[in-house]
Every structure is written in C-alpha cells, then in structure tokens.
Length: 468
Ligand code: B12
Image (cartoon, rainbow, N blue to C red; front, side, top):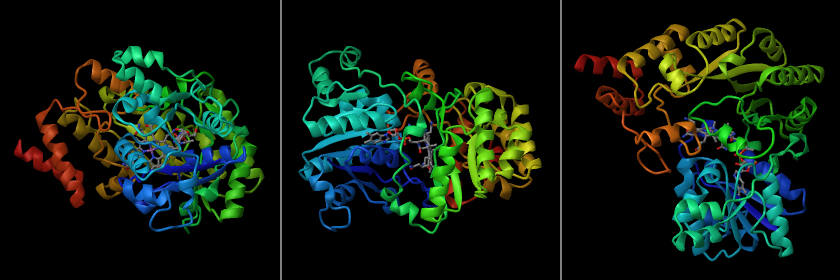
C-alpha cells in the first residue's frame, strides 16, 4: 500500500533546535519492512501552514518529489505536541476538502490520552493509534490492504464508531468505555525494530549539520508530575523501560556516520540512564561498545540528577559523552515535591558539581513558575542559577528556557491534580491556570515581553521589586 506520513509544522521550535521526527522514521521503517511504499513529509523545516501541507502532500500545485499522496491508501498524521492539535486537525480537514478519500489515522502522545475528545470535536480521521505505534500501524496497513476488518485491532480506536456512540447520546464515560481500544503490548525487544528510515527525513540527514538523533531506550522510571512519558508507556502491558543492546545502538551510529556523514549524536531517550543496576549496566555496556569500536563520536543525552554517578560518567565521557541535559526544575523543595522529582536541593547541587568536575558541558531545564510560585521562590531559583553558572550571560546559555512556566499536558499527574482542585483553565490544546500571587502573575507577563526583547530575567525582577 502507498502510505504518506505527515508531521504538521511546529513553528514554535527554533530552526536550530529542530530534530528529525524519529517516530515517523520508525513507523516508515516498520511499514516498509512489510512491503509498503512510504514517504514522509515533515512540515516543520518548511514552516508551511496546514492548507499548504495538505496541497503538498496531495501533490497539488507545486508538484515536488512527494506528489504521491493522491494515490495513497493511507495518510498518517502525527500529533506529538498538544499545541499542534489545531494544525493537525486543520490539515486533515483540508485533505478531505481536497478530495482525499483513503484512510486517515493519527497517533502520538496527545491522541493517546485525548482520543475521546478528538473524536468528539473533530471529523475527518478514521482511526487513532494508541501508544507505541509500530505494531498497530503495520497491522492496520495489512488489514486495509487485505480488505479485512481493522476496526477491532488492539491499540486502535475506530473513530467513527466512537463518534456514533457519542452522537447517540451516551454520556462521555459510557461511550468511551464501549469503544475502548484493546491494549496492545509494548514492543518487548527494541532490537527487533528496524532503524528509523533516515532517507524519509532528508531535510535532516542531508543537512550539513553533522548531528543526528538516536533513540536508545523508551520509557522512564521517574514519575515527574508534569511529564506524560510514564502514563504513555505504563498504560500498555509490558515492561515500560526497555533498552536496545549496545551492539544494536552502535550499529545504527556506525551506519549514520558511514552513510550520512554524521559526526555528533543526540540521544533522545526519555532518561538515558535507566532504572537501578540494569540501567547503569546498560549505559556502561554502551560506553564499552563505543570504545571497543573506536567510534569517537561526541554525544549528548538527558538524565535525572540522581543518575549522575562519577565513575559511570567518567567512562561515558571516555566513550564520547560531551553534553548532559539535566531537568533540575527548581531548588525550592516545595516545587521539587510538587513536580514529584523525588530529589533534594542537595541532589541538584551535587549532580551539577560532579558534571562540572568531569568537564562535561551541562545545560539545565527549569520550571520556575507554577501556580503557587512566590517572589521569594523565584529569587531563590535565580540566585542559585547565578551562583552555579557564575554570570547572567552564562545562565542564559545554560538554562534551556529560564522563563519557563509549568505546562500542563494530558495524561500527566499535574493535569489530574489541577483539575481536581478546580484550577485547570482553557481546553486541552493549551491548558492554563492562574498564578495565586498577583505580583508573580504580573512578573510572568512582563517577563514574556522582556524575553521577546532579549532583556535579562533579573532586570524584570528588580524592576518589579522596585514597583511593589
Ligand atoms: C526529541 C524531542 C523534542 C525535539 C523535537 C522533536 C520533533 N520531532 O519535533 C525538541 C528538542 C525540539 C523538543 C522540544 C520540546 N518538547 Co519535546 N520531546 C522530544 C522527545 C524527548 C523525543 C521524541 C521522540 O523521538 N520520541 C520517540 C518516538 C519513537 O516516539 P513518538 O514520536 O512519540 O512516536 C511514536 C508514537 O507516539 C506513535 N506515533 C507518533 N506519531 C504518529 C503518527 C501516526 C500516524 C501513528 C500511527 C503513530 C504515531 O508511534 C511512534 C512510534 O512508536 C519526546 C519524548 C518522547 N518520549 O517522545 C519529547 C516530547 C514530545 N516533548 C515534549 C515537550 C513538552 C517539549 C517542549 C514543549 C518542552 C519545552 N518546555 O520546551 C518543547 C516544544 C517545542 C517548543 N515550543 O519549543 C512533550 C510533549 C507533551 C505534549 N503532550 O505535548 C514530550 C512528549 C516529552 C514529555 N514527556 O513531556 N522535543
């Protein structure tokens, strides 16, 4: 079957931060391994609006190398960011308006948690793939190709059936329960998955950027209240944290270096260091495999502060580790507890110190604004950042988004908490909440403006302090 996979443009990502969509690369490779003809169109590097993406996918107007869509049996639309739901739905509406009559399926983290709402609020798509997509997607293609019934496949929501039940006036819970998909077990052995089809992502692999994204494991043992990863994998039967063998990862990295001239690797594992001894041993094995093959490829990853272990990280550095992203989030214990980080302020300090001593470049993620943030807490976080990084210029370089506020995503514990407290505002595209402290509210708003002007956060604070 001819298949087109599409990612709507994420215009919120700065061009230098764009990453290849590994999920679509994995799906393309899985479908190809069963003989399907697959193309991928990631609209992010092109920054095209949904209507233009639909025309491009269907080969209307500017006929490019990807004019195959019209004859496709299936178009798959990825929704990995909640804020892209409107673009994805507009794209689907436009595909239908332009006459595409094949199957349209959607998948990703947001649809996994919001399939009921999406079926209630939008038409145009036929099915929703829940959770990890490879096996459900290939089953769907096989069934469509053979003319078999696809509606009751595990891991799949029949969107039309769910809409009918909702229209028939069943209450939302009853309707959902009646059309609940059968869970699809997680991929037990990640080594069995074919490598992401890199030729379907030419915008990235043909760029003279020299860096590629690789996914070595899936799942995280942490349970941070703002993150949906645990719910995404834990909702499905099977071990939520799985890691590829060191040899399998090194094979992919070698291929990227050989076939695509890649010189740097960014591992996008939810948490590079997995749980307990098994997690550490797997990281060690990878380091030893890189050293044994003399890959000498600089790499980066993200992990939890409590994973930073001097001996392990020394070995990883020897194997090529250069850069670590740590989700510090805060040095206020109330916030660390609210985010369920299960770490102390001292754990944060220790991890930063160890990485510094090992000479590893460290960037950190902070969530300084939550609904109950106080001015004193903001001050404590800013002081900490300045103390550990030495200057405000360095803070701006090392902190991914200093003015970050707690974002609420579907499927996360914080979504549930704020809803139960009656504090969740807005709809699922962009949940919001009010700050309790009016000064913090004003500061956040002014900070957003200052940020756009490129002024430092500290100025915003001192100006506001002078005014209050
Ligand atoms: C790499 C990455 C990025 C990259 C961009 C990735 C891209 N392609 O555009 C960068 C670094 C730019 C980024 C940025 C951000 N990210 Co990010 N990112 C990731 C990360 C770590 C890995 C993505 C990945 O490769 N996954 C692995 C593949 C295999 O999984 P997948 O993409 O989900 O695809 C599978 C299934 O979902 C499904 N599927 C997906 N699409 C489709 C489509 C079809 C048709 C089908 C059938 C199935 C299907 O099948 C796939 C194969 O199994 C994920 C975490 C994660 N586990 O996914 C977060 C994640 C996507 N990011 C997230 C967030 C919040 C952000 C930021 C907002 C963070 C921030 N505060 O700055 C920013 C947003 C950008 C901005 N406004 O600046 C959230 C999204 C939550 C949400 N519900 O919206 C995630 C889930 C992390 C989390 N747990 O909270 N991110």
